[in-house]
Amino acid sequence: MTTAAATPITFWDITPSPGGCPFAQRAWLTLEELGIPYEHKLADPANKPKEFTDLYASIVQNTDDSAKVPTIIDGDEKLTESLVVVEYLDAKYGGDTPIIPRDPAQLAKVKLFVELFSSKFQTPFFKILRAGSDDELAQLKQEFAHNLEVLDNFIKASGSEGGGYFLGERYSFAETVTTPFVRRALVTLPHFKGVDPLEIAKSKGLDRLVAWIQASMDRESNKKTGPSDEAIIESFKKFIT
Image (tube, rainbow, N blue to C red; front, side, top):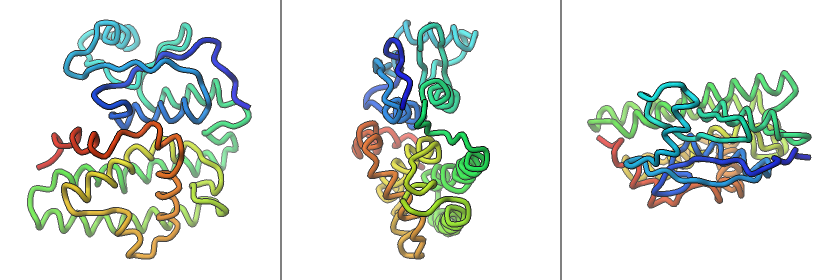
């Protein structure tokens, strides 16, 4: 059972496409998964409303910092930074069905997976987009294929069976903070660089990783909060070299 918020949480995201920022989507996924009432407000990155910039400045106590999403207001609490927001929402509203495991061993494994994902998938994803030559792209693609094997092995060794998620049938923090980047990689890498993470995983027989990717992408909260393929491609043009 989820503990309901007394009043809807104010959740700041960016335009032109809701959920366009992967970090903001982490918070949005959490709000949806926990069934927390919220007001979804959008800020134009090129012309941020004063209401938003003032809010952000009041949180970080620095008017020189560029206001970022996700930023939320929950009663008297005002917070920013995606992992901070996700952990706060889960701790306060997760109730009997939290997305962050309360069991210490499960929590440790989930956090290890998130760290591994960051180094083996998230960072290489952006490196591939910025590859400046065919030789560099070929080298990065080879390294990425190996990274996918590492992730597959880790899920098999430390995850749970019985379902596609890292914890088997249980959706968790392992998906909430990684799904936005998987979604964008599946769209942008084939489009811009001819590199398809899912097809690489399938061709190498990485069945557990394939099941994890498919389960994460098929999750209803991901479908609701993720931007369109077209919006993702447009927003990622600035990363391409």
